[in-house]
Image (cartoon, rainbow, N blue to C red):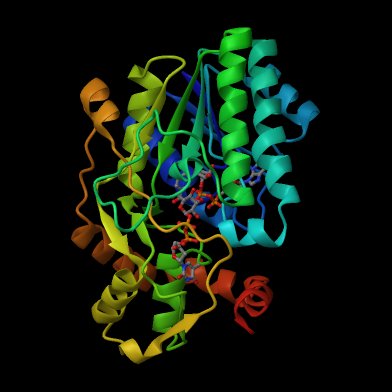
Length: 339
Ligand code: NAD
Ligand code: DAU
């Protein structure tokens, strides 16, 4: 089995590469990643010498490069993680989100049509469903919930999802889609809530909470997401969408306070800043379908996962220190200086 994993130098993609090489020693895993600011080759260093692994630095939007790779590798499957993934960046500059997330997806699927494929899997997000109100804890996103996006990021992911389903219906491409809630764990880029708060707290810097901090996210440990995708690509039904979530809803402010407590840092570091434009209030996934059909359940409790994650950032400063001391400084200044 040869699988092209796009975006494998990013947060979830790298965790997925490790999971697959570990679990399937006879699979060949090709990571296709153009190494944007969010891609980090040092993350993949532990598998670079693995004979079953190949890294290819190209963009999923580069049709010639993608076709060449398909000719060389004749993949059985593609798992597409490659994306611009940060909502705040999409509010600043939507264009690259449309290029990568929509056009890139269509290029990959055109290659799948041209060269043939057993499965094209699109890694999508619960953000395509929009948000839920805080005063209706009885409501959850199911696979039937209408697409109703809020940000340029979620709109670009929804556009890609619609294209994936259209390629299935029109061309018979054997696709699956998974829509997951917020992930956390090792190798999470420090622009996102949990790693940003851990690293700022470690450096005794202000912890910038948007609005009142009451927005709710449904957190899932990244390994549980990888295991769910593994199940969907091997046992999921072609043409279907699977929601993935941990039934683990938490307010942002509670997460930030927990991080302060775990690190022994004062809550006085918490600073309330101007809210994100169009900020989604609550995400909550109903994962009944993937549980009933494929037997998936999240294995890591948040109380354990967050401890493991904080430990990982404490032990791996050599991974994040070069990130936060480089171009990231300019990003941070721009996004937070006058907030
Ligand atoms: P990330 O930003 O950490 O990593 C994205 C990776 O894609 C990087 O390695 C980057 O270099 C690569 N990439 C970007 N543009 C590319 C291009 N044109 N060609 C090739 N590679 C390119 O993202 P992540 O958090 O790991 O998310 C991975 C996927 O999962 C995304 O599709 C995202 O929408 C989805 N997702 C993320 C979450 C989450 O909580 N992080 C939850 C649900 C779904
Ligand atoms: O739900 C899945 C989505 O989760 C993925 O599709 C996205 O790729 C991923 O980035 C994530 O999106 P969010 O916008 O939910 O994640 P983020 O970490 O950016 O923010 C989480 C919450 O924390 C959100 O309510 C905004 C808030 N926040 C975020 C940052 C960066 C803050 O309060 N302060 C911050 O500095």
